[in-house]
Length: 411
Image 1: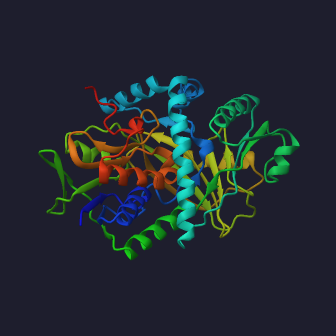
Image 2: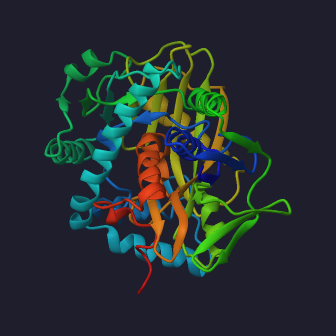
Image 3: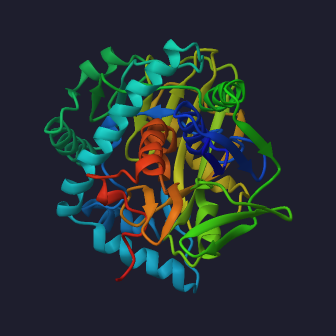
């Protein structure tokens, strides 16, 4: 029986392991800490085709370019004199075009839709992780923001994403927790959300029950290239499987370099504040659009505010300034108190074009990459797992050239 080693035990790695096991492979997962302890744990838990506009888009060179220089803004680049950082920023700027959005958006819509279907299949198998298809609401405080939101909704509807614009009282009638005086909102009925920590624990339980070997505290030290194959070094041991899946999140770039492979990944630190016993909950997840804060109600009564992108941050130190910005935004849009609660932060792996890196590497016959999902790790994990299986078993990937992990390389 063929075997596979999955490097990384976050939501993408665990999904890949489960799908590979279902395909008949013997699977081992190597996780440097605890499964799901990184970016997979405290995020918003959204699965939302409505949020398929890539990070690199024309608007990013307008107001968001100014944000990048402001440490208190929703999107801040921690600029340093590092070649890789500036190369990433220049690549990012090149992709901030309408043409790129037209290429990337339908890909992300398709993958998120497929993930929705696969999460429903997991629920049917008995996995319980708070999955609910209650839609999502994007709220806008300013007329300018609302106009931009309506234009984005129009583009999404061209790709089959249902959108319902709400003006005036209709927004508050849809979501009574919204404050009066907002410019408007857009409701997306096809969206869903889940509890990401419960998802990781359920995937781990399911994987181990199916015979997947999950080794915590055993991160890969590097990759070794032997001809057209790679082996994995880990704690003095050398794993030489039929398939290596590199799904180590933002750390995938460092591991790839040991195999002379360059993956243009930049960490994007994100934060969340979770209230254990919120005094009120919205009916569905709400995006506080100008502030870029996602609000998620969980079925056990918790309420989570998640947001900010701190690009280039390799540490998990908490910035009180950024946490307070999230709290302020919550109280500006919603009739809630956002004091107290548990603060979390994690590092998401971002690519310059806003598309993940998924598939085989041409020169390395047994290496499959699955990383670079940015803020969409939970949203894209099951669909990514299907692509990983196709790549692992038959080198599949036809039609997914836009996700090739070596697409940024100059031939």
